[in-house]
Length: 242
Ligand code: VGL
Ligand code: ZN
Image (cartoon, rainbow, N blue to C red; front, top):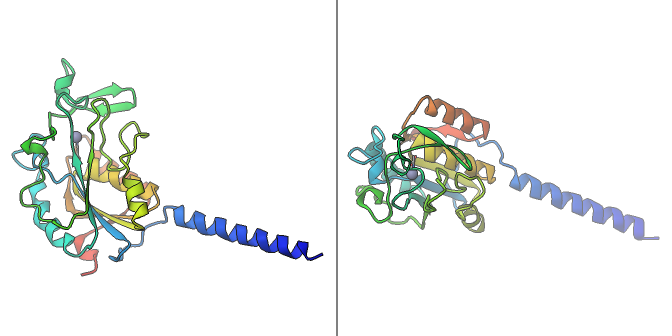
């Protein structure tokens, strides 16, 4: 008659395991200030020539983030970068849709798509990282948007919201719990990357003064609202521990 005790104990253990797993997976609301430790990764989004002044999809002040990110990156042992990486004739380019102009929208099988000037074409100068970006210890570069028919603002999941880049698996396997996101552009690739980082269970921060925005028809306000909804914390460089 020892069974009832054993069963209860086993049940309790199971319940405890489930609880622990659930709290680990839940995107907890980010603290106001991140800890920078072995479990924190800096994600540098799309600091590429085409998004800087002189580039084909220049973001106002895009190059101003370069010195800020260089200094910030020195404080992180673990850094990954994303790189927008489109084939020529990519479906997100206005030039691929006769009669369409840049910044108009179109319906794609996966939803509404903004049409962009040709940018970040694989192997081109415009697709290269800004020459001033100095983060030699970056451990991985995740390229995105390389499928002709699918765009990808997020470094995690492409615009069809199904196709994974593999970044979630990489960061989980490396044991990270927190992600600090910086780069270009706040309202597109930074915003989507940060939302997906949070949805994947990482405590996520966006450093707003280490980002610049495109701000197309209210897209910046919308992006901050969507990030807040996903519990992404909006911080400034000065909020980070030295
Ligand atoms: C981006 C538009 C198109 C970005 C990339 O990096 O924010 N925006 N492709
Ligand atoms: Zn792009």
